[in-house]
Length: 493
Length: 146
Picture 1 (cartoon, helix red, strand yellow):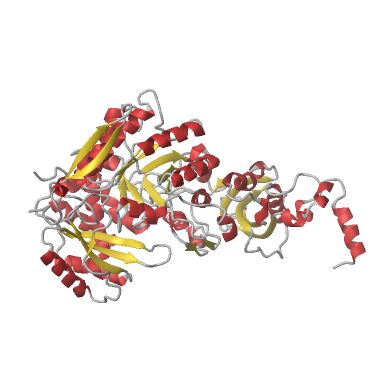
Picture 2 (cartoon, chains in turn cyan, red; picture 1 turned 30 degrees about the vertical axis):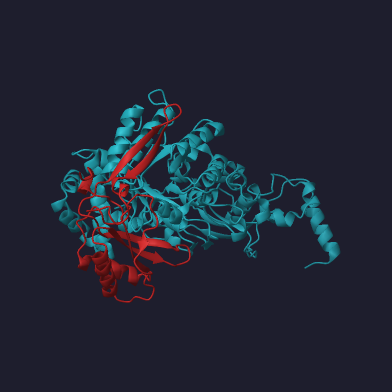
């Protein structure tokens, strides 16, 4: 600690016009202890050759908060120390660097004062955290791995409009995963034919059918036609079974006004749920969440587009961060992986996504990619949706990996059934109920799963046909997004 | 005439697609609920509309029950009084973050389930207002299922 005169002289040097390292601008502080009110981010950084890890981390802190490339005297008009993000910890990423096939990477922990962000705005948060900084030249690649949201900041977001608890109460469905399917073919059906698929699947035993992400209002099917025929199907199926049924009507449109118009129409027809795509953008998602809250509607989000930035390990952002932002933005459903299906998904990573969506509190669990303890501050729980290449023969695995609070979506696994769509739906429902029964009875259902299914197939012909058709179908490819803290990649089986 | 769906019956609850649970199987499910610390209760109705939330309670939820046998006895009593009603077992979780039913499954139903009529009221444009009407509820309470 110098004298006042020394400090004045130091500050004078610090703010002399010109370019100095970010580290010396105050963006690197290894002694900093994050406050409980700080937003904390973890980045995976691959620095350019010749840039040391501390400087690269300081640069990320700087460029995602207050800095520009050169010293500006106007910093001295503010409490600049508070507004500067602080990189406070840098760890080498395991299994990177010399002797490995991967360039040296670092995990940088960066703390941001909460007042850097507008309350209740994902757009504002992300404009800093994943804004210009991702194109910064001193960094070869950058990936946002995780974030810790302070409770005080979370409380500025209303969170999911409905949440798992109230969704189940409204649907009167407890103690088992919900069952869904996406109408196929996803494009080209007329409204009348499309509704046929919805009716058959719901009457056969599914709880939900779903529009696909890219079905909006194309020449072969105007959105109003789809909504009208789908609601006829939903109500017919509900009368035929005595159950509440639903169809996710995709209200994604070119403008906010268009989305409101479609959503209002869905509400006027009595739909229990509407759907939007991630590509509509964070602000539109928050607006639709508000709309859903006002209209007692469940809001389903399809994660269309996420793999363009979440799949590769070195650059972009991890899907668990999208999960966090979407819980804050206030969706009720989000597609979050299947483990066993056709789309990317390592079991350990998917556990992290599901916990992020469903738990009220998550501890640090590095093997699941959870780098921070997170208190969810009573924000409702989001129902994860497992969709893509799953079938009845995997029911024991799905229940084991994904648990009970999930929507299992069997599109091809319902509509592609050799005995028809109703039979396909029945096969899935029977397989599910048999597995839940076995689990509750204390059976080792993961090991005995195939036998439990075979036994049910003895009295359920549709299940037998499903097992005969798909028994041997699996998608065993290595995942690209895997844990850094397990010795070997986990095959997705 | 019975319903035309799979099993010709309403499919509310966790296990309506399985053969009716035996008392032993019901006991195992109740044991699962008790193991989780949930309070189990028995409810009955002769109005199975999908949005009929509040079935009649056959006594209070058993908050202090330890043995599934006690619940099987309650179910047996309920069946004796209401042999042709729908009877369901529910399990309530009071844990913070849940505070909601965690299980619900049928343990009794009428011999024949006539199901529901879908009423359509044609309104503006091509819109239709739908109403689901239970055939059985045309008769007064207590006389709905032969």
